Length: 241
Length: 270
Image (cartoon, rainbow over all chains, first blue to last red):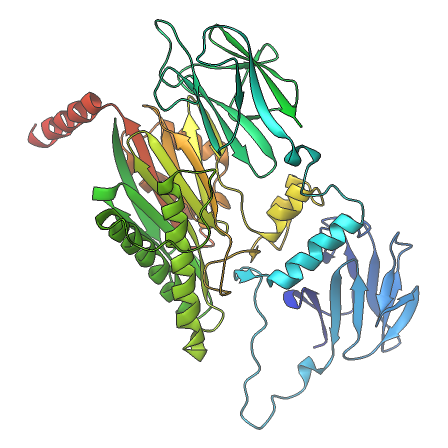
C-alpha cells in the first residue's frame, strides 16, 4: 500500500497509509497528520486519490504547501515527491508495496516515534537560528548582560547591598548564606535564589518569602524591581549595569 | 539531617528491554539515574556505562584531589558540583569512544541525572530529559530543564506547554551523553531542609504520571522506598509505555530516622 511519511530533521516521525479517504494535514489535533508548529495552519493541506492519481491540495494555508520546493495550490504527486509544510517534510512512498528486493538486504525499519533519538547539534543550531530570525523571542534576555543585585531596604543584614554571582544564593542566619540575616530567632536557611537559564527564581527555605506583598508558592521568577520580604528583612531585586 | 533513599527501575508494560538504570553510592550520598537509547540492547550498554563512570569518577575524586577535571569548570557553582559535571563529561567521552569503536553500537547514547549531597548542600547535574524535582512544603518544582526538542521550543516561545504535551516529538532529544565527542552539562545547587523530597526519574514516569499525582504519592508514603514502589506501579497502571526509573530521597531529622527504625523494628518483632 502507498503511504505518506512525516519527517522532521531527517527523522521519520509518523507513517500514514493512503486509502480511499483523504489524509488531512494541519496543526489541529483531529488531522491524520498533526504537526504542532505555529507555522502550520489548523487545516493546512490534504492528500487524496482522484481517478487513480494522488493529489496534494493546499487548504488556503497561511504559509503554503511546497512540492519539491515549489509552492503549490493543487498538484499531482508521484513516488518520491516531498511535500514541505513549515519545517516538516512529507514523503510520498508508493514503492512501499513493491516486493522485497531479492538481494537479501533487509529494509531498515523506520524509527518509531516512541524510540528516543538525538537531534544533530548542527541541525539544532539551524532550528534556533531560524526561530530567532523569525522574530520570535530569543533565548538570551536583555537582562543577561546586567548584574542582578539585592539592596537591603529594611532589617539587619551583614551588608547593605549584594551582587548575585553564583547559581545559588542563600538568605538566612547560616554561615552558608550569602545574604546573612542577623538577630535572634532568624532561620538558618530563610530563602534561596537560584539562577536558571532564563533568569533568577526565589524559593522558600524555613520561611515563606513574599514578592511585592504576596507569599510565594514554589519557585517564583524574579523581575527587575521586585520587593522581597523575608521575615523582617526587605530586599529590592534590581538588575544593574 | 539524614537522607533516606528509595530506588527502583522497571521494564514497564510495553518495552522488551529495560534501557534505564540507576546506581547509588550510599557512602558518598551520590545518586545517578540514566535512560539509554540506541536500539537492540545498545541503550542498556550506554546507560550502564554512563552511571558506572559517574560513580567511579566521583569516588576517585574523593580519594584523590589530583583526579583530573573533564570539561570546563564554572565559577558559579561549588567545586563539588563542578566535579559532578566533570564525571558526566567523562561518561560522555567513554560512551562516545565505545560506540565509535564498535560499529553496531554507533549512535547509542543516554540521559544522565545525578545528585550528590554533602551536608545540607545538594549538587545536581544533568544531560537529556531525565528530571530532578524538589518537593518542599507541599509545592513541587522541576529543577532540571529538559534537553528535548519540544522543551527547548517551549523555552524559546515557539510552542505552548500544552502543544508540547500533545507533541509526537517528545522523544527527540537535543543533548545526550555519548552521541558526540563533547556535551554541555547543566548544573544546579540547592540547600536541603528537613521535610524535603528530591525525586530523580526517567521520562517513563513523567509521561505517565502527572506532577500533582507524583507530589501526593510522595507526601502520603511512609518511606522513600514505599513512594518509589507506588510511583512505578502508577506509571504501569497508566499504561507503562516506557521503562520507568525512580529515585526518591527523603530529607529527615536524625532523631526521626532513629525513631522510624525503632518503629519498623517494633513492627517486625511485634
